[in-house]
Picture 1: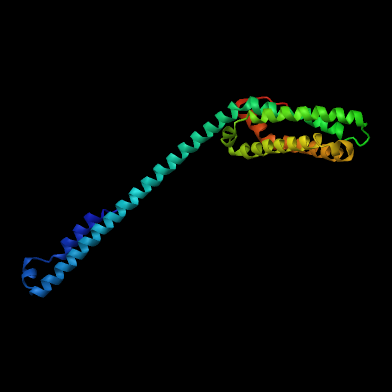
Picture 2: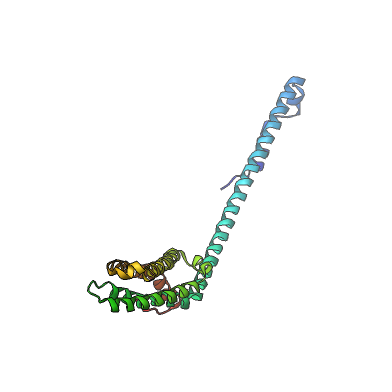
Length: 221
């Protein structure tokens, strides 16, 4: 049971006064000293009450802050889910397009590939890279930044990796030196194949989240 400091202080003061005859028996110096002691006791009681009041107010403030944080967390989670669903089609197209790029790169990674066939494959992958870049540009960066923590960073990494893969492809297809030296094309093509696998892995958290949260279907073969 919590004791009321003001009530307790009143009891102390009541016990501190023997009576009027005792008071009149004190000289002026003794009366002043006793009065000072009583005033100090009152101040201590008031300070204790204020401290208890402050403690209670702090506890209430902490509870209110925790409830507000929970509501904010729930609001953020709902907003992140909305962003994940909103950009699903754009991300799905970007994700699926690696199935166009990877086979073309794999065909160029054949060291026995004939020159004419290789140049034709270079032209195809060059055009495909342009299409991939367009698909990536349609994805809102703000929406990607607002994705849930469990898949946001990985998705952003996948998109960044796609942009670099397109840069590699364009550098290879536009280089006359590379076209004359198919060995360099072969090395670049191997890098693109590996990068497509890495992009698939980076997209995995988003694919899993989309299936779990809004039952979206993406073929991750």
